[in-house]
Amino acid sequence: MGANIVLNDDLVSEAQALSQIKTKRGLIEVALQEFVANPKRLDLRELRGINELSADYDYKLTRADFH
Image (cartoon, rainbow, N blue to C red; front, side, top):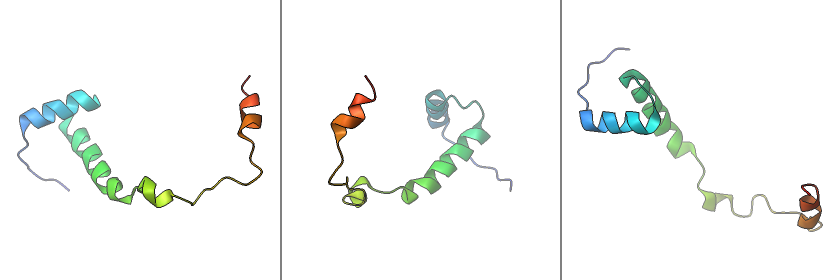
């Protein structure tokens, strides 16, 4: 689908500098993907209590593997 749009040049330049994306088409594609994905991300507060550690979990045993 093609469309002609007028973009804020300063905003495009800033977004390209932050993202290292060189084309306006690529920049808009990524921006749209992020716009769609953002509401789908879970709020960390919603995860509270979902993945609780088991009563016999020993964090010291896990750390021993890294020494």
